[in-house]
Length: 410
Image 1 (tube, one colour):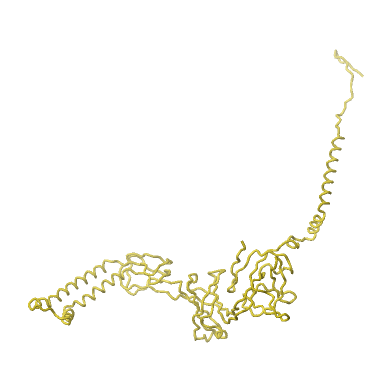
Image 2: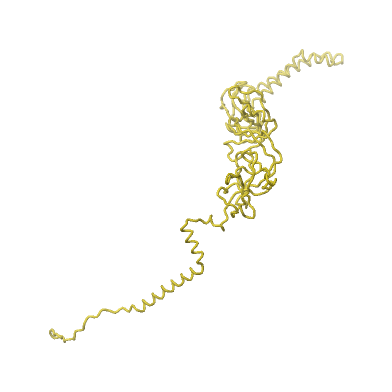
């Protein structure tokens, strides 16, 4: 139908047409890509189907990599050895200083300088305090003048006669004249004045540390007044308290191992110097003196744990006590051989808490552990026989109840 408005020409009407989108090529392309991806995944799964199954099974069962047979577990080991098994008496003790010096002035005077402070490290002969030197210099000059005067009197006592006779006095006469003139006493007074002047500078009597210094410049210090304490920390002793039942086991010259909170992770080696004869009637303990030469880590007043040698069993096969565990009520250790943890039954003997003696097997008469065998001491509680392991560190032999740090295998 055509309708004309005014002078405009009548144009034929056309129906409205929606644009046509050609989807068929896109659908074909998408279908091809999806099919290719699926085929690739199936081929990958077929290539390593066993691994995929294992991972899925592991994920479902919660199995970790450490539990797989091919994974080597990291452990710490220590070598078995032949040596003396030292049985010990464990106790505690107090640290005392053998050289604790209360320093006092030999002469009195006014303090001119204080050269050190509390806590300072000093050496023997080092000046600590200087007194005002003027009174001491004056005393020396006065004593020297008196000596010169007495010497002149001594000479005048025999010079005129000697000039007349030409004969000098004998040795006995000269000695008598010296005493009569007062020259000998004057020499002594001069020597004393010089000594007092030297003592006006107060020095450290020993090497050590200044524990206390109660003095300030300008103070008046009297002769014999204590004003400082010097402690030589290299000369200390430990008085260990030992029960009367254990005293007969302790011998002078025996070894002592010392540990303290002041030296964590370390142990010091000392010697039993004396076993004192008196036993405390209340505590029923005796005292054992232990000396640790050359160590400066222990300070007077500290507590220390002491392991005293009580008995020494020579020529024993020893393994670390911490390496021994029980399976089916039988003691065993894990020995590393060819990268595997070998389950090795043992017959343990006596122990000092650090090392344990291994006895021969009752059937074969042989000791199953050999010197130098790597015995696992850490990481072995959940191991199974013939598990694959890697020794990540070798632990040094312990010498007391405190473990020494591990030494890395670099």
